[in-house]
Each structure stands twice: as structure tokens, then as C-alpha cells.
Length: 398
Image 1 (tube, rainbow, N blue to C red):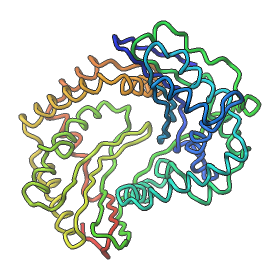
Image 2: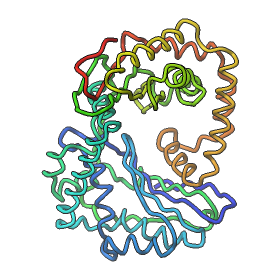
Image 3: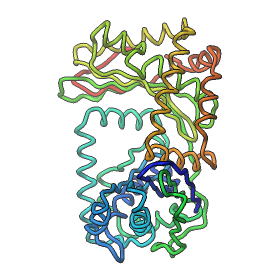
Image 4: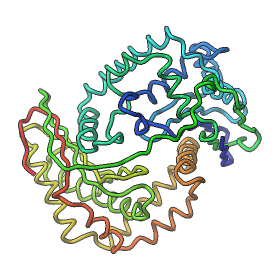
């Protein structure tokens, strides 16, 4: 197990245990298992009930939580630095000594099904999940929560097999950031409750594919939510720095082209923004928006026009410099949070083997040229877009 620390002169600390396994690693028979396990590890250990797990952190005035993403799962605590030993004992306990009680498993199925229902009822979430499933035909496009049918069918044995397959101690990362993290060894030991299920076979080989298309999901609601995008490159590609700056200037800020044109000038929506989503095997340039059902085509036409202008004229030197200033300022602010740095340290270690320093990243950003930006713009192919709409409409034109 790799233990990574960054000491900061703060009264608190954030500590996480990360596993390089998320929904993208699941086979068709394992949909939602990574997320299900995240839930179940909070449902009791040999020495703590689920109430004890919560109470032991609450009485410290701390936070304990977890999340599942496409390529990793993280469990973390945030407490005052004097309470690191007590908090980490709870964190290590749920990872190494959970019981996966059969009765609790059956109860938790109901909780996850309600979480799926909540996602389906939220148009923002539902349209994005539909976009991913339709645009990405590999495991990267599958829902992290799984399906109701999968969740209902899972047994304790299924969870233990998944744990043995992916929760290997040598691949786990302990990430600690804040005050006092240099004074504790963060050793979780070598005994895990699922030791007998450890498998030596390699993990699933991941593939990323992206396909163009248009999906219209009819739902009787006042607005139509829209997600559109095209394929980019993986997180290992150095063009990611230019992509980040392009995204900032084009659609990620209030002064961006999309926001100013579509919302401020044309008043076509309340919310519109762009995003760059990069995985280990591929990536996407994305645009999110929502508007009244009778204005959807105007919205889509407006977005297309802005992309066409971007491709024809590129960014200006002033836009690039403003994007750099925006990135450096926002990035510096994010580093004031021990939680944000803790997560970054863990993900960097999973992806690159070690923490990528702030100076390195800012240097890369400051070296981006207009020519670098144009290389990314050239990848934004209007003929290869995928568009998903959810609302009270029948069709759209692109």
C-alpha cells in the first residue's frame, strides 16, 4: 500500500484510502458493484456497528464519507489533526474488517434503488447518464449506480469476489494532507476480511470508444435538458493543458463565449457551460444546457454558431491570457482545501505514480500557445458530435 503525505500548517487534516477501481472496471455482470461496495463498507465491522462508525467520527466533530467514480473509489475522513489516529482507525476498520452482513445488504439494496430513482427523476442527471450510455459503447459509458435489476440480484458472495478482484493492498493509496500527517504511520495492516477471495489475475483491460448521434428522450417537463459533445484524448495527453484553457474561455466561466452569447445576449437559457472530461483511455469535450421546450432548436443553433465561430477564428491572445489567469487563480484557491489536495494526491498517484506539483502544472499552463489551442479546436468536429436531449420535444436538427 502506497502512503502519500503532504504536511500543511493547518489545524485539520484530510485522509483517504483510494482503490483504483470504479465502474469502468466492471463487467456486464458486475454493473454497480463498485458503488454497492462503497455503501456496504459503512454498514458495520467486527467491532463497530454502522451506528458506531458514524458516532465515532461525529463525536470528533469530523466528517467521514466516500465516493465512487469511473476509475477509482475513495473513502475519507476530515478531522482536527489531534484526532487523526482515532479517525484513521475507523477508516482502516471499514476497509479491512467489514462484515458485509446479509441483512444489511438486503436493506441497502433499497437505499441504492432510491438513489437510482433520484437520479432518474433529476433531468440534469438523467440526460447525462443517457448521453454517456449512448455516446460511449464501452464500460466508460455505463452508470456508476448500476441498474435496479443488477442491484436486486447481487449476493454477499458477489461483493466479496469483486473485493478480492480489485481491492488489492498493493494497489491501494493512502493519501494524507494537513497538519500532523507526518507524525502518523497510516498502517492498515495486511489482513483483510476478504483475503480468501484475492485473485491474482489482471484487471479488466479498459477501452474507450465514442460515437456520434442524436437521442431525444421524451419527458413531460417544462424544460429540455441538453448534453452534447465530441471525442478528445486521454488524461495522459499533454494537450489537456490547452484543452483546459480553451474550455475556460469558451464555456466554463461567466465571461465565456457560451455564457455571454447564449444566456446574456440571447436570453435562451439560465444555465449553460462546457466541460472537458478526460479518462485514462480517452476523453470528451462537453456542453450542458437547458431551456424551455419551444426554444430548444434556437438554443442548439446558437451553440453550433459559437462552435463554428471558434473553429473559424480561434481564440484571441487576450482570451488566452485571461484563461491562464483564471486557471492559475482558481487552481491556487483549490489548493487551500486539504480535502481537494488529498484527492488530487491520490488520483495523481493512481494515474502517474506520484503527486504532480502545482509548479509543474502552472508552468505547463503558462507555456500554452495559441497554436496549442488551435490543435484542440481542430479536434472539435461538428460532424462527430453526439447530442442527447431530454424533455417534451420530438426531434432536433443539428
